[in-house]
Length: 359
Image (tube, rainbow, N blue to C red; front, side, top):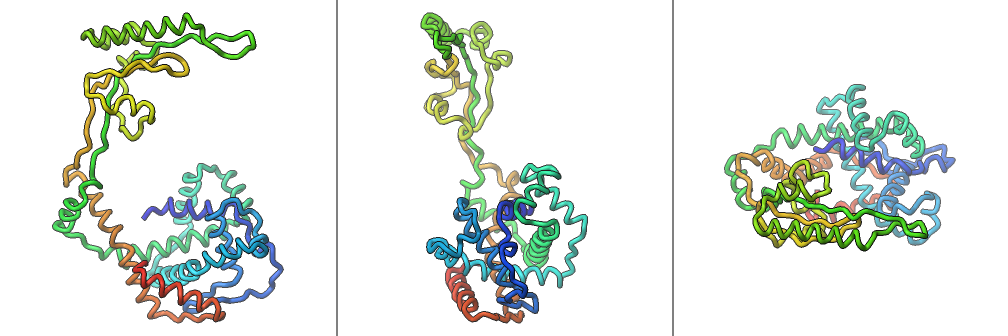
């Protein structure tokens, strides 16, 4: 489970979200549902609605506008069914985590808290400011993290611990999904770069001297001619190139083809090892490349990716197994809806989810 990513995403949703309860003067909370005695309130729903709508449309800044605009009311109606189903499921998983003996300690909280800071690139002061801007307290953040921790503990103990993957299953998955275990295509290049000295025009704008540009072009074309005749490319680079790569014989890579800029990839993708590009004009001079080596994608050996195979099989099973666990927990739970309208929305959404085979 990608804990830090999940929690960083939760914080990202919370940061910048006005706590709707702060804009209300309600004294008595309206309870929408009790799950084994644990309540979910109207205010909590409104907070989650705002977060969900803002996730879909980050331009929304004023929570109060959600009550006034027909489009936003429509967005609320769109996100509410999934929120209600998700809330009940989270409560069931969190409660089961407590039953299984999972303990959320101060040390656990600190570890998660530090991971959130790292994911969001925040120091202590930045974290405090972000929480304050989002209307969060350290206690509300702790509650979020505790719920996620208990949910994950339930999944780990009830599902992942008992999930066995056989050798035969791993090999069958590997054989059926070779594209998931491919090494990337790579290329190693040698670069020659000839700079064109910049000048300043009478208006103070940067420019280039035509004579200097022609001289640079002739220089790199001459280098290419020498290389095509078989002269040592490293020697040519040491004499001609103005690039920092000159100290390494112009060597670049190996690099993944997918990581190369589209313009450079277009120049080299049709070339074989040992072939040269034409010189091209850049903003600062002329550049050309030799394709030193290239490797095609290939399937990695089974033993090298055995762990990755197991993780992918586990991930592919997790949704279905979580679905089974939630079905069992729902059957054992006392779920009391205090609002018939929300109950109908929940039941309709849950039925649709089951029909679609979703967790």
